[in-house]
Image (cartoon, rainbow, N blue to C red; front, side, top):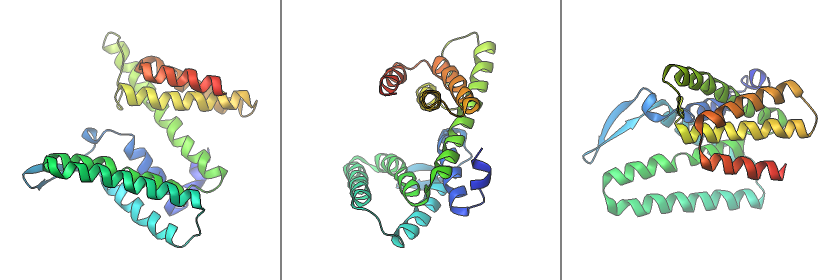
Length: 215
């Protein structure tokens, strides 16, 4: 796994840790409650990690030349986040808190742009996704057996579980198509297929069909 060696870089470790935390539902993370104009906002470790990642990414991006397409993506994302927060301002503090929670995920994009350099770091990011898919699959199977069947949310939620599993499955299929790294491909396909079945999301199934056509 590339993840083990790439964790030696503090910025890469921050990126992967933030991705991992964002794959866990906020309600399942420890939280500190703060009151904002009569509305309670929960601050979880994922929020803190996103803030740290955003600060580190902005500092790194300020020191490196970026192609036009990167700036186009940054400006577009900033406009979208501004639109989300701006339209929430007239709908009360609860809507503003929710809008900020959604917009803060843009920090992941900044982190990927700043720190995901080279094939090894991309592979390490995929390691995180495969590990989470496999762990969610194990939890899902246990809940399926002990709970008498039915679609399973694991610790992600049905739709997020299925979406993550579909991504992992398609990655494994690409490796098979390229006829390389068979062991890694097998793990990705098995974990991904199991998650797709347990999550049972129609949107995920359509995504799998489209991905298979492209492959």
